[in-house]
Amino acid sequence: MKLSPTFVSVTYGAGGGTQDLSFDLLNFLQNKIGLTSMAHYTCVNASRDKVLSDLDILYKKNIENLMLLRGDPPKGDDKFFQNAKDFRFASDLVKIAAAQERFSIGVAGFPESHPESPTSEQDIQHLKNKVSEGADFVVTQFFFDNQYYFDYVKKAEANGMKKRIIPGIIPIVNFQQIKKFVQLSDATIPQWITDKLEPHQNDPKKTYELGVEIAIQQCTELLENGAPGIHFYTLNKSQATVEIFESLPVNLKSPVILA
Image (cartoon, rainbow, N blue to C red; front, side):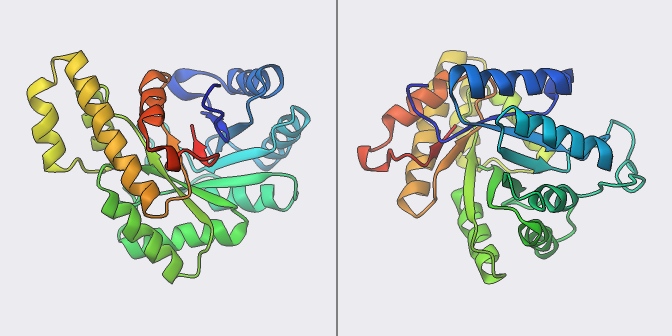
């Protein structure tokens, strides 16, 4: 709270949790704590009636900010979304939520392309579809090479998109965990980061120190070169985010820093 984030986001039933728990937490953060909160919402097991009902529930809880995602299919069901009746893509959710004209809508962007996109061009087209249906801003998947972000923004702008594209940053406080995330998302870890962290991967304290140092460098370069803010993926461990923010140059600490 002392960082005064523009908003905090709550994942949608992550880690085996239920939707009700996510909605309860959103209600607590928004209405009891006073933090502007954004609800993740996915296409998984979504029907038109359920989505309309859930949007009403969220709005009645004063949740006016949404992060609309396709979500991940159940394990082993590769055709889950192909067989979905109402919502196959995040853009389907964006369309129905934007038509209500009562939400601020964020969508995901993938600087290194979504793992299921055959080409970066098709991936940009998917982003354009989400923006065309009514998305107000984009938050990216995590990345560790800023050039991917800068190139992604240029491609989006070249395709007529003028919405804010906010870089998503994940501090490397556990190198083994990050390597697993990278495998799942098809992201890449630059060799210089691997060379720096691998010798200390069994030393939690040193890994933490180096991970925070790397994230400070990354965030500073992004903000100095026009990024409209930073979205930190805290993974429920906020100390690294606090240290990174407090270590940024004073002129870069603005209200558009996100957590």
